[in-house]
Image (tube, rainbow, N blue to C red; front, top):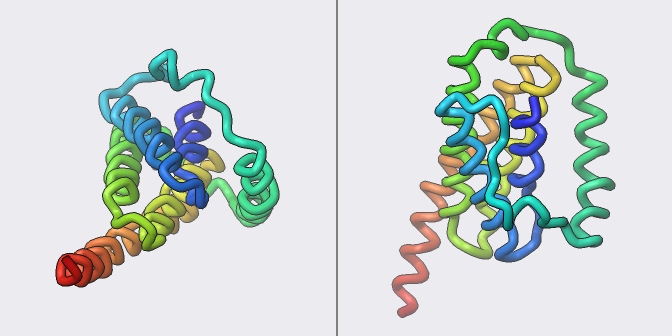
Length: 164
C-alpha cells in the first residue's frame, strides 16, 4: 500500500511549474517498480529528502485532502478482490506509467497534464480504499486526459509550429 500513497502524491496536478516533472519522474519510477513486482519502494537517495514547499503543502492540505475525505465517505469495499492480486498491481503500475508519461509529455502551459495526473490520484485513492469503482473512475478520468493531450496537444503544437 505504500506504493499507492507514493504514487498519489508525486502526480498531483499542482501549478508548480517545472517541479511537476520531478514528481512525474518519481511516479514513473515507482510505476515501473510495481510493474516488475517490487514489494518495497526504492528511490534514489537524492529524491528521498525532497520536501514540498510551504505553498504546495498548504494547497495540498486544503484542496486535495478535502476531496480525498469526500471519496473516503463515499467509498465502499467494492471489488476489493480485484485489487489484491499481483497481476492487478502490474496493471495498476502500467496505467499509472501511461498516465504519468502522458502528463509529462503534455505541451507546457496548456494545463493538459491535469486530467492524467488527476486520474492517477483518483485511481490511487480507489486502490488505497479497496474500491474498484473509484479506481475505475480514476482510469476513466486519466483516459479522458490522454485523449485530450493527444487531440488538443497536437492542435496546440500545430498552431505553435505555424508561428515559427
